[in-house]
Image (tube, rainbow, N blue to C red; front, side, top):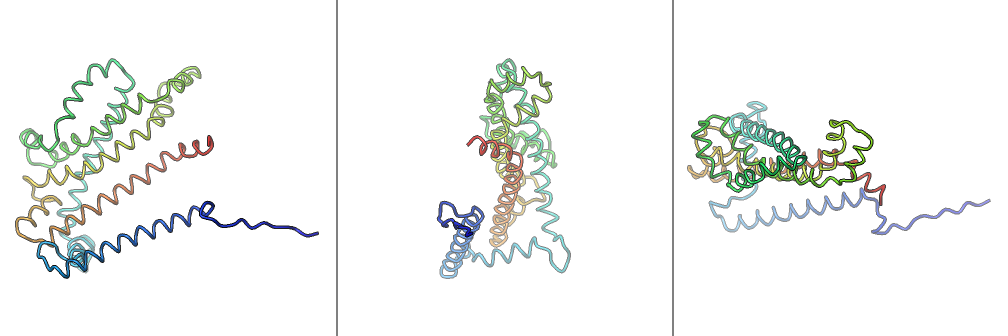
Length: 280
């Protein structure tokens, strides 16, 4: 008895997803390397003191912040990077708690929305950097002023997206949860917030980049530490390599924080992708 086996033809349409992912990652790195090589060649030819070669920038960043023979944590890391990260994450955390909590309450109550909507629209229209002198007068020059500014400026995308997400929960879903007599707390944490999750996480992602921007702005004035302080000092003393190294550090921090948030988002919304595949 012979057994016939059929080997499926490998085409771009049925190529394993993992292979596609590796190819896509490889192409991205090739593009990045190509840009860096072009940058290196162009700056080597131009020899401008204001646009140093990327290799010199990387070397300066490594000297400032990477572990060395003197210790695992350099002076610049303990004086600038760690305090800046602490302020950013604290302000961002407060913004997440306030934005999700207040946004959920407003989204569930039309009456509360009618009372607060015009106030929120008025306050969010004020650019946060313009309130820096107000926070400076009210809270002084300590870290609490910078944390408050970061929290105030980054709360709006989370708050507004949470309101919209809670409002967007399908009435049929809410009605079904009431029919099955699901307790209010379970309805909130197992039905409403998961359904509004994509909107909330989109607002959190936007707020994360705002937190970094406000951290730098708040450290540029009346500060004695932080990445923003380091950036201003480098600009005033014409330490061009330090200035570019600080910009590079900010880009890396923003990328890493966004990557971590993406991983958290995929885990939280895994159930939604699974249900989508089942439906499809």
